[in-house]
Amino acid sequence: MTDPKSPAPGQGLDPADWAAFRQTAHELLDAAIDKMTANREGRVWTPFPPEMKAAFARPLPQEGQGEAELASQLAALLPYGVGNTHPRFFGWVHGSGTPQNLLAEIVASALNANAGGRDHGAIYVERQVIAWCREMFGFPETASGLIVSGTSLATVIAVKTARDAALDFRSRKEGICGDRLVGYASAEAHACNPRAFDVLGLGTEALRRIPVNDAYEMDTGALRAAIQADRDAGLTPFLIIGTAGTVNTGSTDPLAELSGIAKAEGLWFHIDGAFGALARLSPEHASRFAAISQADSIAFDFHKWLHVNYDAGCVLVREEAHHRHAFSDRPDYLKGTERGIAAGNPWPVEYGPELSRGFRALKVWSQIAGFGTERLGAAIATNCAQAAYLSGKVAADPRFELLAPARLNICCFRLRPEGLEEAALDALNEEIVLRLQESGVAAPSTTRLKGRLAIRINLTNHRTQESDLDLLLTEIVRIGEGVRP
Ligand SMILES: *Cc1c(COP(=O)(O)O)cnc(C)c1O
Image 1 (spheres, rainbow, N blue to C red):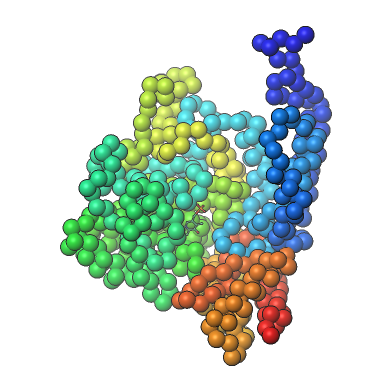
Image 2: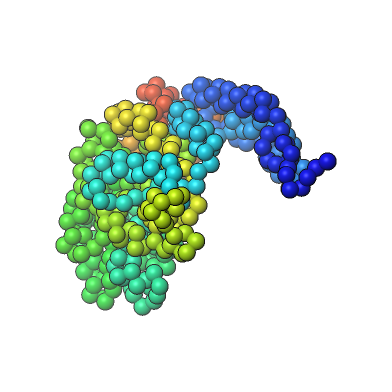
């Protein structure tokens, strides 16, 4: 007889047979480790086959299928990543992850912690990570921070804090009706910055896009002029966003100068350091990023150049009170206490828009604790040396044309056979990148620089070897010869 008030083993959602579950879990763990052991081998990207797509287009199941069947379907997914765990993934800006991170993910999953608040281990682990980040970027001990999904959300949090601080936090109740706030970022700034303006009701046009110089860095003369023009027009400048490592070329705005302008003008200075800011961990590159410590806020990612498995990013805010005032709102059912589970104040929910949140901090903590900043910084320096190596080879080879000075970890170039018009060169290089991706040999992405289509090689990959870059160039030439009529 079944009692509806007391589910028997197997009637709740726990395994009916723990021994069988343990066996299944161990096998799946082995399959996962096998996949990771082979990360350097095989194809970069393997398209998701039609039968797999069909397997994920079924109607809502009324009956579950049992653990063994489930585990085999989970394992079947393992070959079909985008390719970012492979040494020849060079597209966009993707971190390559570490097997070690799996250990933290197992514990986080077993704990099933909700890190929105309350007094438990996850809260203290996150505080440790935030403290380490303050140290990494030279922020004061009083600065606050929050781990989020990535730089996009971190930017929304930073820009909201800057917006509300500029309006004496009236905007939290009254909105921004009547206030015409404007901010500034370079023309090369990432799309998440205007998107934050959009999300926050400021409008993307309120983020002025300042032209860049030949090195793709913000033109500070143009910035000064834009601020003055906006003031003359009766608008209220409130924010300058400097980028440490632009997504197109890896350039970095003159951060110290931007910080000086922000101070002189009374504006909030935010840094988009999604990947580039982490170059502070490499002694060789740190000095270019010294002025990060002067910023009012920074948004950056752990899942890019620190190779934490997706997803994890962070926002730091110099003035903790500003950060808390922009988000804190504790209704009766979320009141803190001095003792018991509701202690552990302040809670992370006071620093961002999310209440329930997973234990992302653990995989970040484990990455930093497990490898240490020297080794993580060395992997960053290696990628920079590789970008310089690639750029040197491209510049020395008349079949190629370098399209931007190689900065940091990104090299943009194109194959340039004689006698082709610009439009034909664009089409040729685009086709080369598509064929490279489809062949499984390598995965660059493309961008446009000064109107020209560039093969864009981004190195945020701790598995890449010099030989991978040599193979890349050989394949580009070989495919290029095949594409041409
Ligand atoms: C990737 C990136 C972002 C967006 O970060 P997400 O983690 O994808 O949200 C913002 N800025 C720069 C410079 C980036 O490279």
